[in-house]
Figure 1 (cartoon, rainbow, N blue to C red):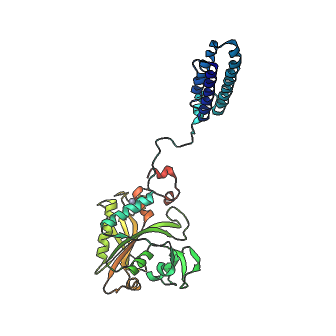
Figure 2: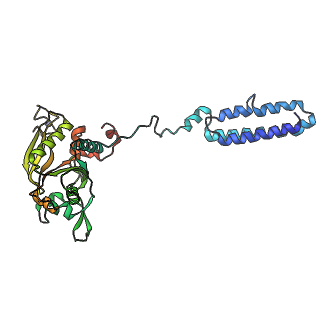
Figure 3: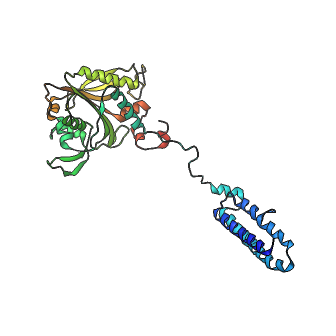
Length: 349
Ligand SMILES: [Zn+2]
């Protein structure tokens, strides 16, 4: 090797080190030092070759080699300082312990979504289809078409959030208090026979407690055809509840009043938590029955307001609170856990 070749080799070692230094990290800084300054390191071997050169050449080439050695030493010290003192601690510093660890856990559907899916699945098997409606409704669809006139006392139970703006017919806009407006909107557009369910979010001006919230979910269902009776309603709801809670569950219909059905009923199911241990069960409060649905045969006035001939067509409708079903299916005692998004709880469901 002559002195020109030696200089070229020195220059290529310099370039090689510069490139490696840019790409270095805490994990390879020690290896980089060995590669260039180790006993058999690239620069050290080149410096050793100086012994074959004349004294004159050594005087020129020696300082060049030592300058690069000093540069590399200083750069390595700088890098070690940047990444941490030694390799062991550098590796530690390279990890961000706050990052999630492998394997990354997959997300899952929220219990409310799971419940809606389960409930919907049963009705799809029975030939129902799913319809959706807007959250922002006007008074006509939310109340009047459902046989709840302006001065009707049941509007008090449906106190909700009103908009300051009125629609073109001077009706108030409001956040829907139930999913029943979807029934009207669907019947206006389609001719019977109809089998529809409509799951969705509804709003009321309720204070939050263990069983109330200002926003919650309902599933509305209705069936309109010729000669639809309470017997059809009873069979449908029994089939639905048994699919979810098992064959041994019994249903009880209690007469009740909802303006949009006639006759109307509250539907209770036998408590699946206490069996015979009545008196001690916190879910049914010892009664053995849990209220799960409101239902009835559709009021002729509702059919007429959608343009149906109520002498020809009849139907049934029901409404269920999704949270109530989620609480029963997942054994949740306080509805608020469904909205707090606490992963420690959601992961158990
Ligand atoms: Zn019970």
